[in-house]
Image (cartoon, rainbow, N blue to C red; front, side, top):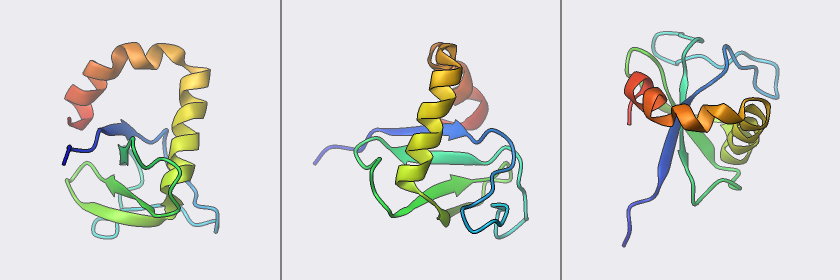
Length: 96
């Protein structure tokens, strides 16, 4: 069995879920610099995305389905294609 390819990327500022609530860490309530861990083999799933905050807390976020997280990343890359060139820098800052 192979290890899934996971990309971790920082959310662009606070994020509002479709139900209108701002997504926050359930332990420390952080809303900034949240990081999405995305399994590249499962980008169309309605399952919750896994998020982490700067304090290292991690949780499955039902307000951000994996398919929605993939769409957000695609929009960010469309707006800023050079972001892929900075992937190593992002990994150093936000974790591998």
